[in-house]
Amino acid sequence: MENIMQLFEQASGLHLVLIGVAVVLVWFLPVLLAVFFNPKHLKLIALACVPAGLSFIAWSGVMVWAVTGKVVEKYKAAPTQGS
Image 1: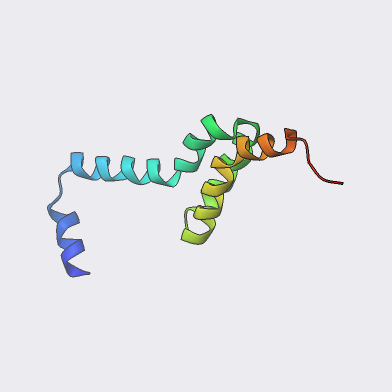
Image 2: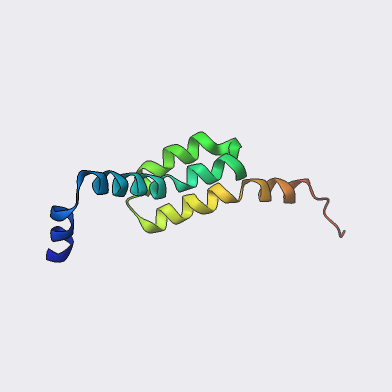
């Protein structure tokens, strides 16, 4: 833990800003993916990202939700075979 604290103490302002931007991009990665894969639920996914970033399991669930939007629509539209 002391090594991490030393790294942050020695980091310049630019490094800290770049780390902050990287954290925000990863935190809201499901929103960026939802723009392409699940635009129908984009607002809900964006809202869910805020608390989900605190838990890897919840964040993973939001990530799955973000990328499965068009897949669900594809299977809903497919006719079912059988009796």
